[in-house]
Length: 200
Image (cartoon, rainbow, N blue to C red; front, side, top):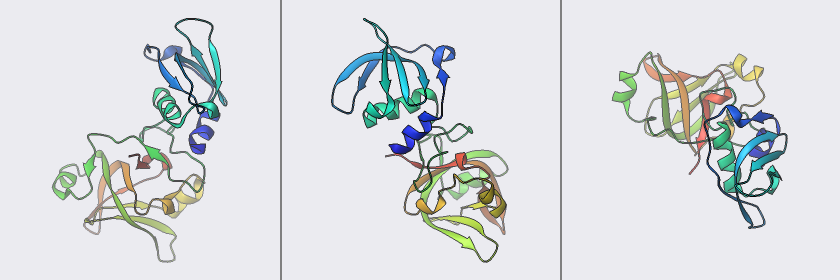
């Protein structure tokens, strides 16, 4: 949850442009609850509109884990597609994303083949993350399939938010164009926002 706090701490958002929200129950870390809807977010603080009474200003780190996750969802920071994804997280932790119900299983070769040359979301369990020889490129291999994810060394060096070595053994979701290299299906990713561990 420290990762979520750090992500939220970098945002200064007004939610007036988002779809209308309804008041919902929010939980604090100390077990207390209150009704409200998110009005705005400034670094480390959320302003809630209350159905009755004045607006409430609450520090992000005082929200329960479940409420922080809900806040991430409302702010739209939990998707793979955009650069504002919660996957731009602190080093050393595996970023989490919400599972896409339309994601293709990495072992479903037929479906992957049918999407060749197209952008898709793929989900699978990481068997290993390897460095390719002396090139410094990384390849993520998945259990039960030859499908893999490739990350160029130059791309890795341009961004400090990569956390690929924390993904081994986790079920991850990847977004990108399905291509082939040496007759093996793969997605070549260029930004950390394209991959994240699926929260369960």
